[in-house]
Image 1: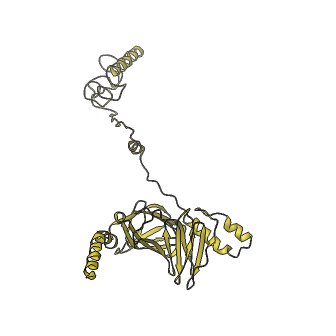
Image 2: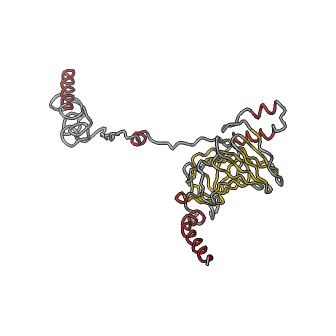
Image 3: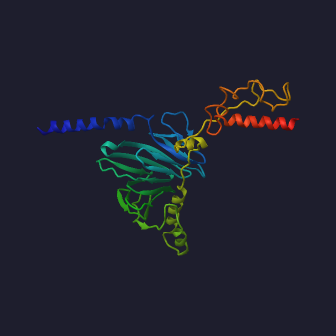
Length: 327
């Protein structure tokens, strides 16, 4: 009697999650994030594309993307679930799994770091069963629970350093798991369990504790140097989007007056001293703007200070002065 109830429950759960799962795993053209910074030569290969494309600021990140950086190059991507990935130089990263269902309190992300360095900021914790944020390397898995950490792969060694102020990273290799609390790090050689976590004394931008360890002949100095290098290799500021000055003012709610277009030599202007006396050039005839529908500001509805009787007064004064000097 219990079997049918179990089947109905599972079917209902599938219906609830169906839309999100299709969106995350079947809709490869749906954007799951944006590239917010690019330095140097960075490329992305979209699933089914003939060849990789260069990455530009504000390009979309798609499901199943493969991101690669060259020497002295790096990039940063901001994802829909508010997580951030920064890819260091000479790295290859694959987006293998992505599910984001905020209404169901679920996020499932699996990223593979084939080589190089990768920094991840996982600011939110999702409590629904099945939620996870993992970075896989060829031999290990780093699973984050609301923290800030860096993973690197170098010469058959995977390293993980927790640079956050809270949360933890579960680091697994060869079926053995160690927990990295804030301020600790660990490494795992391919085919071996992770080393016991040690305090690193490094900040989000690196630090000099690795240098001190070398001077003090610390047996862990070389690993600490690798951790510091991985941290420094994944420091990258977001690139702001350039805006025109008038666009920035408009976004700030500051009104911007339209720029009036005034012809340099409009029809009807007369240059020189013509019949009727030596008038100021441009004040004879029926030039647009001197009476009636000319450009804004010369009569009627222009900016404050140029409408009404002010313009005629200026013109009258200019004519008087010109006539006075002309004779």
